[in-house]
Length: 133
Ligand SMILES: C[C@@H](C(=O)O)C(=O)SCCNC(=O)CCNC(=O)[C@H](O)C(C)(C)COP(=O)(O)OP(=O)(O)OC[C@H]1O[C@@H](n2cnc3c(N)ncnc32)[C@H](O)[C@@H]1OP(=O)(O)O
Ligand SMILES: [Co+2]
Image 1: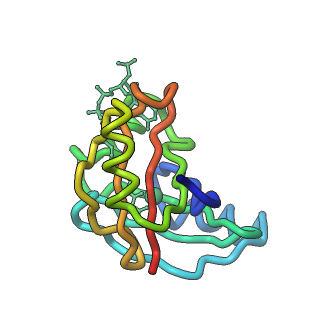
Image 2: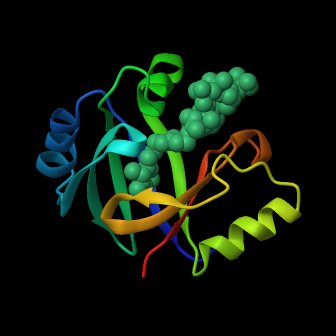
């Protein structure tokens, strides 16, 4: 059902401060920055090998990233797997009794179609499905 790791989502308090570490110290390069209103986040993408790191800063106090940092601190918040047909993947997962946070695809950064699986159904990892055409 899933292919490669599309990206690894990392929650940070301050995107620009985090970017200094990833770019100036680790030598990675930010290729894209975007505000995704629906998710209440500002994101930056840094490709690494065949995948990418997605740094996420919350734009609102009640957003998922703000809540995550409040409860768990900064760190890995989700892992995103690439799928070819997200609607089909969602249907299959639902049929198999997996709890979906999103039962319909939502807008993801860069125009991707995304949907999250609930961590209670995935052995504790917030999983994002991601389709890019
Ligand atoms: C821009 C886009 C893109 O790539 O294009 C993105 O990535 S947007 C990325 C940001 N957007 C999202 O994350 C959207 C999907 N996320 C959500 O809907 C939410 O954050 C939930 C995952 C449902 C958690 O919601 P909330 O914090 O209100 O619930 P909660 O604290 O009661 O959490 C319920 C249980 O899930 C656990 N839990 C919460 N967040 C977790 C996470 N990131 N990874 C693993 N477990 C997690 C909690 O510890 C708790 O377990 P216990 O009950 O055992 O304590
Ligand atoms: Co993501």
